[in-house]
Structure formats: structure tokens, C-alpha cells
Image 1: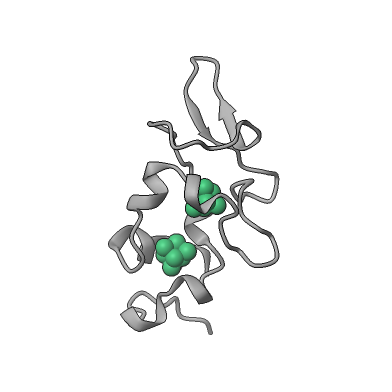
Image 2: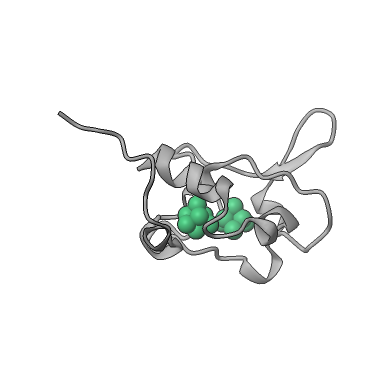
Amino acid sequence: MNIALKNIAESDVTCSNCQACCCRMEVMIISDTGVPDKHVSVDEWGGETMLRLDDGWCSAVDRDTFLCTIYENRPWICREFEMGSDECREEFNVIR
Ligand code: SF4
Ligand code: SF4
């Protein structure tokens, strides 16, 4: 029987063992941080989000290292997303 983990110790939640779970979320681009056009998806109303590929991850994730390839230009939302925060821990638990 498998029991889902709900209370993973905080020290277990780190980007190094997470494989960029949060980079599978929809990321709205709400300010110009210089994200290259090839990573931007524009909807019919002109709203911009990070492009996600068929595997579900943001197109800017390096598929081998799971690191952001546009770190210096990543969207504001990515900058604000804090490792170990409630949102982070939720993603970490959902995808594991
Ligand atoms: S911020 Fe959280 S969800 Fe995102 S890669 Fe790091 S540990 Fe994973
Ligand atoms: S821009 Fe970088 S940090 Fe933001 S979702 Fe994409 S890969 Fe992750």
C-alpha cells in the first residue's frame, strides 16, 4: 500500500531534488523582463504566458538539468516563487 506524503520535512523540499515542478505551472508574463519571444505564448486576447511544450514543462527549462536557461530574464512570477513556500510545497507534493 502506498501512502501519500503530506508533510514532507522542509529540508526535503529543494530545487535540487524537485526537477523544477513549479516550471510546469502556467506562468503569466506581466512585466517585461526580456523573455525571448521563442519562449512566449500569446493568447487570442494578447495575454502572454511562458510557452509550455508537450511534456508540460516551460520551454525554457533545460530538460537535462531542469535548470532555467533564461534565469537572468525569467518572468517576475518566477522570481517571486519561493523555494519552500506553501505554493512550492504544494507543487512538490502534487508531482512527486
Ligand atoms: S521552487 Fe519549489 S517547486 Fe520550484 S523547483 Fe524549487 S523546490 Fe521545486
Ligand atoms: S522561465 Fe525559467 S523559472 Fe520560469 S517557469 Fe520557465 S524555466 Fe521555470
